[in-house]
Image 1 (cartoon, rainbow, N blue to C red):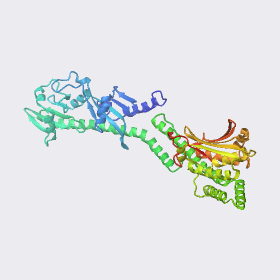
Image 2: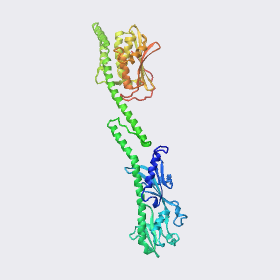
Image 3: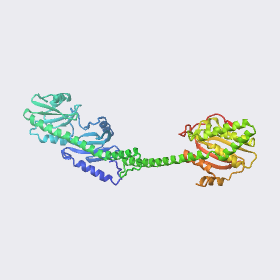
Length: 517
């Protein structure tokens, strides 16, 4: 029912449904003139006369939950005789639900029963024309009247639904009204009352016949409803059970499971989405697992290579000669700053992420030591807004770049400038370390960054590049270029307010703070 009409399997499905309906016992030979099935996606199957399940029918059936909705609007009232009782029908509409999950709606069924056939059944066992049968609803409207040509009008006018219902619930269920006996019987699972007007000698035979006929009708309706509910449940619940088993495998970290899709309906859409989800989870699981391994190795390499042995040797040598010369003030300052750098660099409890304020503190320790060594030979300029210092960044990125600018960019200079600019650019935090010494060979630097295993030369820069990529993903990098007479090394990272997550953060209104040392 859920396949589109142009689908190659649609004709086979509807033919199979028609065959099931046509093969029902007590079907079209016993008063059922039409059956219509309507699925939740408005696909319908009609057998017999064409029945339309209107929006009013669906709303009434849904409001009645598991109770049927009866409609006989073409039947006239109790006071009026139907103009043509043989051309009207009594229809039943019912909401179909999944037997395995009663909260799930499958569709609707509408059955049309011929009033003429019902009258013929009642009349077939009649052996005396002085017997008449009637079916009345709670609004005193007659659904069935077999008294054509007989003088029962005065009795019908005096009988109400409430009286008949009371009579049907009594132990006798029969009363004498003049020369006639009136018997009443409440039809189970319907709002109707069946009553007869008969002469005493035929009362017993007729009552048994009516009870048998009406009971058979009720059984037929229930049989249709149960069979159709079972059929719909097999079509819908079986693939959902299969999907549930696959989801259980996903919860056990088996991301290789897939579902074979051989349908073309809503269940197929769900299965395709499940397959895409499982494939994506498999990819992400492998990528994160391998990424963590590479990140751990890169962190180890970074910690092992951050302290340049030449810097250590030269600093210790400077401290020695200053102490020999009695320059205790500078010795004390160099030892203090060296101690801070060692603590920040070598502490085993340090995270790979620190605040920018801590990163700048480490850089300032390095700059302070170099200023004592070189005096006023070089100028160090740090430009960073105050609010940026609360962001989290990868540790030990700035100091290696400043050291690289000092040792390579200004190695043959007696004076020079090293600038550090830190700023926001959309969702990124940008470092720029610049020097006005020997212009950098951009092509050579790019080659060193791209080539794997090119030796110790350029190792520190490759280390920085790999750490940025592992921690931030694509679009964040280390690059090198020339600008206005300066060699520029630029790093971009995500904006982070915590060690783990990256967030988009609004730019505050404070002014730039410039640090100079």
